[in-house]
Image (cartoon, rainbow, N blue to C red):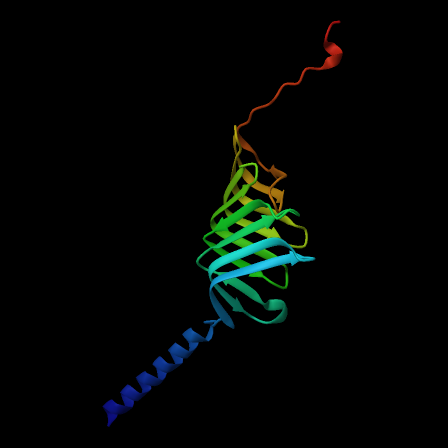
Length: 181
């Protein structure tokens, strides 16, 4: 009998341990495969988001969507031309805050062929800006610029890079007032 009581006590402790371990595991409210979202204004498509897996968690202000297997975001102009594309291996969209974080091999390419590479990028829907405080590399037609942090508009047509390093071409302009006539 003593042996049975010892086993019973051991099992109760195991159940308590399992309960403690699983207490913090969150299950998604919903889960979708091969998800496509379309954001539009006045029937004009502005942004498309596609993800192999999208899981939704939380409610109201704490609601967020997690894309653990990556994401692809395309931004469109008024003529429905793609102006830029953002891809990453992971993303989380904080719905209430209107902020999306892209992580792990983040790449943004604009319609001029300029490419941004980083490991962490934040897209603020309200300000229509993307930014990073981490290492970034921007490759243009004739330059590779690196730095710590950057900010750009969401279609990546205008950008600035912080704590810059790398080789940068500086164009000399002729001052017309110094030309002898």
